[in-house]
Image 1 (cartoon, rainbow, N blue to C red):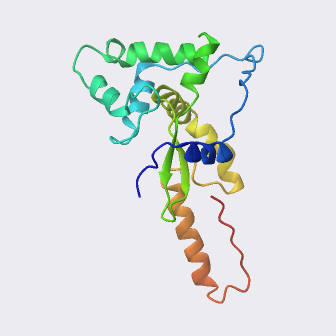
Image 2 (image 1 turned 180 degrees about the horizontal axis):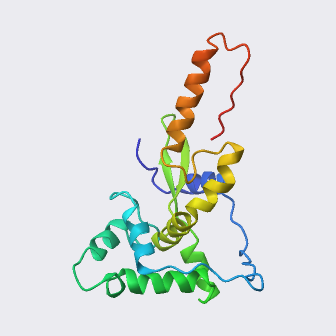
Length: 189
């Protein structure tokens, strides 16, 4: 349905749905806890996990730009774009950058998508560097997430085809009790 042109009315609707907040205070790292450290291969893996058509944030840098850059055949992983990018990501994760960067790295422009009824659906698109860091953290901690979440029934994190497995498990349970008198299901999105 497209994007609404920015008008005062649309901006007000966006502000109603996403009020401005004050500055975010980032807590200090607890004593004795070292921040996660990425290797160039971790960053390459995170970049390659993006869909080729992923949208850009403020900088207009797209994941596809970085996908192209890391595939240039020059030396080993550490000498490509992924080496310097891993260094930048490590600096950001460790909090060793100017706090003023926070609004740019962690912020996201809000795009006013037009709903079928001409309403406004705000979509926020985060900066690519923040999304790379998030993906790299998730990839590196996937096993820990699965170990913690799978026992409580969360199969969609860190489990290969976990969400699909959950769907099949529900279908199998329904097949065993077609009247549905003895079961209840709750899907939360």
